[in-house]
Image 1 (tube, one colour):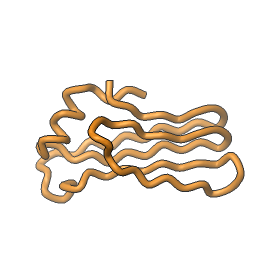
Image 2: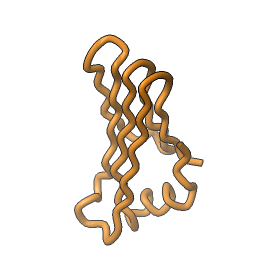
Image 3: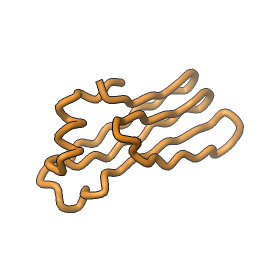
Length: 81
């Protein structure tokens, strides 16, 4: 899933808050954003992965974008377009 470039830029400027989650039952889960953003990634069991990102200014942003990508098999990826 591609996050529109303007949304990623607005989030980097603090204009929009981002709450992103990618999960998979079997495969990899990744969130790829520019500027080396820290992502928390956990593995719940063999093959099961969950990646989560919340922008640091989420509480102060006037608008918030929530994105969730999920798959049972294969990769779940959220990336800046």
